[in-house]
Image (cartoon, rainbow, N blue to C red; front, side, top):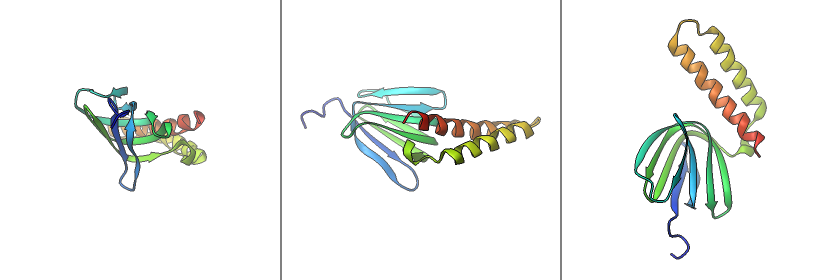
Length: 139
């Protein structure tokens, strides 16, 4: 189709639902090692998602954002599949719940002691809560 050249087919899914399945100009994804932007023709890769916002640019409804929490992203030259354990539009985020989650993460961090596993879990909870709160402030 004319007009869809050099566009990426992006699919964002969780175990419960498909949130997005359209072509876009580019997508920004929060990987465990930081944000990465994917354009048409990107080299294939598989990466672990972190907590943060997936930003879809140039889609049929304009630019869109979804807050994701953990999962994987598969990049092929003409398509991107994002498998997130959880994903929400910023308007769907319960800020008070995210703030309670942040408090819980900080409490876990204080109680972690010498346990590396407990410390890692606390940081995961904190990162997820902070990403949700940040997502709502960008509405």
